[in-house]
Length: 386
Ligand SMILES: Nc1ncnc2c1ncn2[C@@H]1O[C@H](COP(=O)(O)OP(=O)(O)OP(=O)(O)O)[C@@H](O)[C@H]1O
Ligand SMILES: [Mg+2]
Image (cartoon, rainbow, N blue to C red; front, side, top):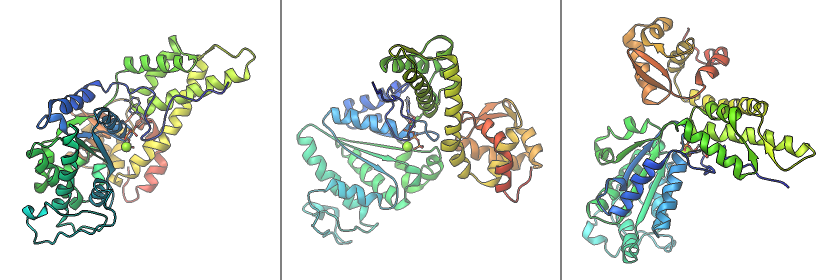
């Protein structure tokens, strides 16, 4: 019998078990249940790449839909506010916008909204009017509106201003709305220091991080068992430990171990009960690691400046946490200079502050990847030497 691999090592895909996110889910559910003004109704979710931001937005959407709420989930890219507007008014595709820049808010009551492009000056008011009209309908059914924006770090400022302004007013008017935006940790410096967007600073901050290994272990045990393959003892411990609690690595490790054990069982005579061996586990972890490099480490480093990378290469010479003064020395720079890059890399959640003048990598296996690819990375960070 052909069985399908239960693990989902693909960006944005719901995992077989959503592990270790009870606290944030409780905050969100409480927000919906407590009504307008509850902190969980305005939330910003940040975390490193592949830590599970998109998945948590999908889960929030599921929770809201179960309460009969309408959910609009958008991903930030050019034209975000306009797309949001189009989705709020799908039944009026052919109507033209009739708002003139001079129209006052009181004049918006009977306005028709549609596919026509709205200018960025007009967008906050138009969006607010469209959301308000949607809420009129939803609230009559005791329902509400959840808007989620993924990849918020990539939004255009004018779109963010329009959406934040509209949502801010609706929250103040105690409408039945919830707004969650998610993105890389850089949204903090990008949006929250912007005067026009102070409203976003008040959003409840939720940082997604690693998942405790015991939870990973339990989830592996259950997921494997449900799919007809057993994993236990040393193999199970090894598998859980190799993930370092990083959500994407959980899926990768699970996927590759499962695949190897399944193939072995298919080729053996006595199909039926299969148990993962330590050898399956070792091979699965190795395969997972090479995929992790392509999917996470490579793109993460591509997004950094040459000097950021020089800083990381200097850190990778250590086997554990690095002293910031030693890193500066290796870079041939003074402490103040190195500190600029230290701060940037901490903000981007690539490294973490360990206290006592030490830093360590925040992304699993990044040290190993840097060592293996050092020559290549150095060559492409031309202009800096190490
Ligand atoms: N709580 C979790 N438990 C188990 N697996 C998870 C969990 N959250 C996410 N995953 C898995 O991790 C991977 C990454 O999830 P997701 O795409 O949501 O991350 P992301 O933070 O949105 O990444 P990116 O920054 O690249 O957009 C997926 O394979 C997903 O199935
Ligand atoms: Mg995502």
